[in-house]
Image (cartoon, rainbow, N blue to C red; front, side, top):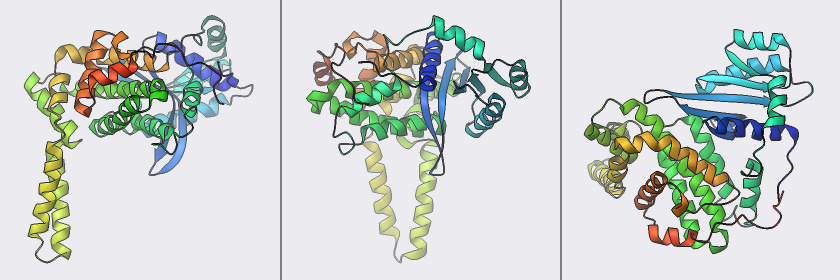
Length: 359
């Protein structure tokens, strides 16, 4: 059963659908925090890949109201663009005044005005193919214990917010951790395998997007050098092994300051840290993502996984394209999830969820 959305949220979904069809990757309702404080939600966050060297991140503020206060929203979204480091800012407003467009142009904010929105409403409908953001949340809430059994919705919101913090190794490592949680749910929660599969797909799409963005900086490196950068990044995070060693040195200095005979303690700490890191075996990710054929397809893989996560007719992994299956297989292997078990549990999940959704 479809959920009837308020007109503002319905317009966000409509614009997202339009932009997806135009070739963008789009996330709706991205939470923005600053130093632990909630600031706002970004209505639409866009990612596009124009070439091997070019990526663009844009944000859109959507206001579908009788009095949209468009001029004020231009100020607001321009400031938000600066705060998060987006490349472009847009507003979608029912206001049709010429001065709104000219003011937007002056501040380098693109205006999708009332005339555009009116035409879009009449010509573009995609609710039969995709779940809305609210419907995905409702599917999660059908599992009444999701809050106490791993906080499913909280995890998704946290992973959304990471796209603002940065498409980098630190974010990718966190997405991998949450993706492992949902992959395990596919195997262990027989009654909720479809929704956990959808969540897994969604987080894997973020990973594909993040790696695609990071590869922009590696485009002129040799395959071996690219592999080294990726392996170190997925193992040690942003800054690589040098950053980790610097952190350990600072810790060592603090211990020496306050504890006598600290050498053995420092040695134990460093040994334990490096022993844990050895078990990560991130070389498999470095090998896979350093391949030129894989890098070229990561953006389309991200698009397919996002679409599959939101599709009303669910597609198990074996029904996805070969590039996406290879990508998911690499992640499952790295996360220690048995591919055959995962595919076996997904095999019969090809029908839309039946019954009313909780609102």
